Image (cartoon, rainbow, N blue to C red; front, side):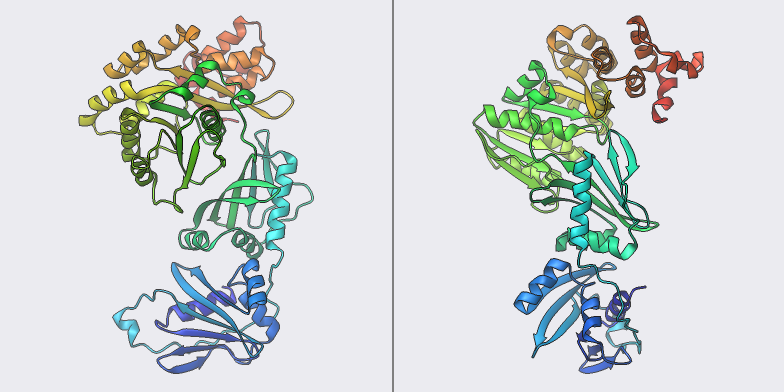
Length: 510
């Protein structure tokens, strides 16, 4: 246990107490008008700086050095402590007390424990934690990596073209440095959430470098994080190669449009391109509800309002309900997480708004089933009718490794026609793939057709398309018919290749 942890434990076990940490003086605990010394001797000035550097991030210490005082909060072990830094005649002083003491009857009369804390002047401080973080994020951008992985006791690693590899010439990061690097990019609310729960999602932007979506966590080795690079420039519909039929979805006055796929499949990039198309071609009010905000949209033709869950609003459902009173024309819901959010999104689409949202489903037909299955059986019939009238399109995508490096999205496109609307209403979603096959002239594309097209263009290797395909037997047959070598599929037994269900586990062996 670190020295600051021991001090906070003592303070936490003394309700109503105040901890005084003064340079060149013994650390004391004040309670009920009396004081108890917690160190055997005075605390040297350098040891004071080392200790306080563990309480506040480097930018806050810089503010203290300039202004001579600082008030902040420190989350620790499910509690929050007030930290007050001052200079008394040139002597730096830190005062700590619990912000909201959790008093119990048996604690309120207890005397503070006679605890002695040994302070080591050599406690490490990491004033360059923010610079280290910026340097590693810079390497992520140089490598063109989508994700940066930092773990306690491990060498930094990055995901590039789908593969996770160690970053050359980088040493493993030990625990206290890792925590200091995390704290250097967190504001007080995020730090409190991280220390209380062991997890935190937030966005961070380095001017001139880029914007990053970050997940901080604690595992068996200690703190760690994963950063997802968000392009500073929004990728346009032209650059993504979105079809005219998909672009036409952005011109609808009302309805529900879903972009689906597994985590890391490029859903956010596609959604940002669609929102940007609305922003440049219409004169409306766009509201986005995200966790966290990723792509920043400047108001162009439209007025754009962006809200972040956890900062600007409590939840998706609360923000979505409030959006109906904010005169929106287009609403983007970053994730349809629960039944109530899905229900409000469908109602919003029905009442004359265009709603974009995401789900973690792998195919367009399964998206419809997922939405309906979230509702209790006695409501599913009603939801089928509502969805058949409000759903306008589903884009399901997966990222494939490109020949020569990089990745490209294979997109399955479902556009709701009268025939598909009837299937949804009647609960016959299993017939949707055949309707999509016979409606290619309308702009519909199945995932198998999208993958085969990428192979024919020379963009993706046949084996990569096979690994990404939901129907293994179907894509093997399609590639073989077109003269491509499918010997890589021969490793499976003939019985396994005969059914897509049996082949499904193979997709996980990557």
